[in-house]
Length: 104
Image (cartoon, rainbow, N blue to C red):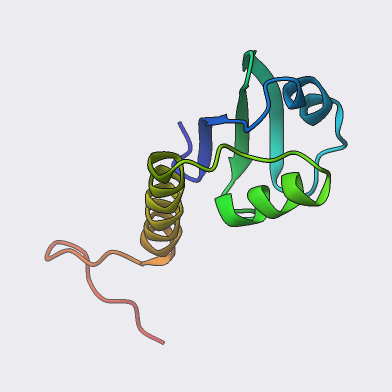
């Protein structure tokens, strides 16, 4: 499984927005968007090309509002933080004692 592909479920402010969100043309980096349940969408995106704040902005620009409760916002901020960590860790060339350093 690719660590830079993220699949998660987001809650919507209005349940009826799910169908309209699933019908939207997907931007670069968003691989899949589907309705999981009324008021919830499942989104799969590639961290090399998109992140959760970009997905949120794209949904908002198309009139789809995500749930705005404090716990929903906190969860999305935590996911954005872990997305940044995953992207940063993927860019590190890990060095181990049994691997000689690269010569540049």
